[in-house]
Image (tube, rainbow, N blue to C red; front, side, top):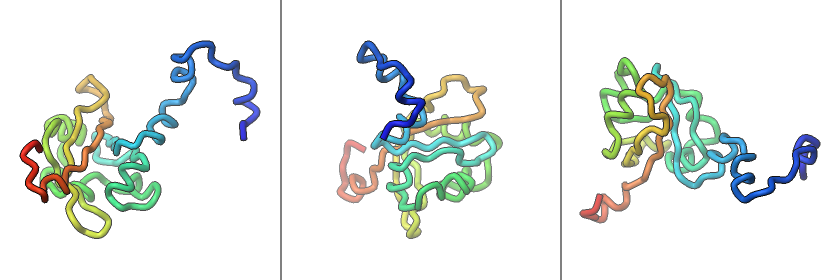
Length: 140
């Protein structure tokens, strides 16, 4: 059902117009790629449903904790000076994450979507490679 404000907006006149009219958080929520955003201080400020599913946590639980509680790496658990720097340094590498049941999920970290190193927030995607590693996949 459409809200009153949605009915008042003019219908986009081009295919790109549909993308431009979609709020960014709505788009991130709908992606099937696990996304995680952290602040310099280590607070998890955003996790989309795909990230919550990958790690087995309930809706919005991840945003109530520090990143050090889901990263098994001692450097993350010790709250590095800048968590955004920690993620930038791990671009393209495998990190160990804590699943809700205590098991380890291994994931490749993408490069942050924000390009400036001075940005206080990093948004990264996570590619779960746990099963591929168990199966001895040499392409990981």
